[in-house]
Image (cartoon, rainbow, N blue to C red; front, side, top):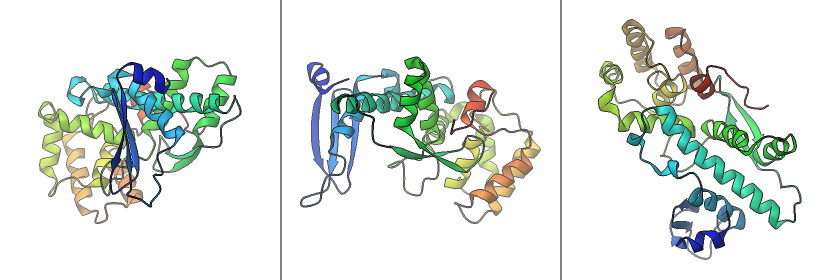
Length: 268
């Protein structure tokens, strides 16, 4: 979608002086956050505008509050599909602006679905290959949404270790916390509030947000709570992952497993 379509619908674009550089796109309001002069506004570009127009004009479900959805999967997918539309809009508008020439590489680090490792993925090269192969737009968007679920975000809290998908699932769990006695019982077992590493591990293994609910026994949950309490560093992901595998051997990590029952390699 183009800027003229956005303005025709009553949308406006605003520059906001801020202590950081960034951009956000929402229905009727796109903002570019810019450092004061003489600093350059890194996000004030055509590509960023094309991306935010995708957010503003596509996938209205992404703007529904978390509690509107009846599952973590539904909420997370709506958010991630919104990002997929933004990437696809950016790719198409930027390529059209270049007269159809191939896009420059746009490489992002994507966490592997099955572990805490990461794989660099050229998002725009991926789109180009899928279009050449004849994929339908809905298929491309679904793949981009899965990539976004495993993408490391910016601006989602200082010290955050979670991917977009893990953030989305955690936000849904917090918004609907009163409906989850098993989650509340687990938090009561922890001697402290869950830190960034705890949150990442719980969401990675879909412990309280999986399609089939909590499958772990009370004994396993107690062992996990005790183990998490003993981990001193919030960013020691190798230790956290080993702990989950040891105490929850039946738990399977990854958003594709939770959504469809079948894991998919992130770099294909």
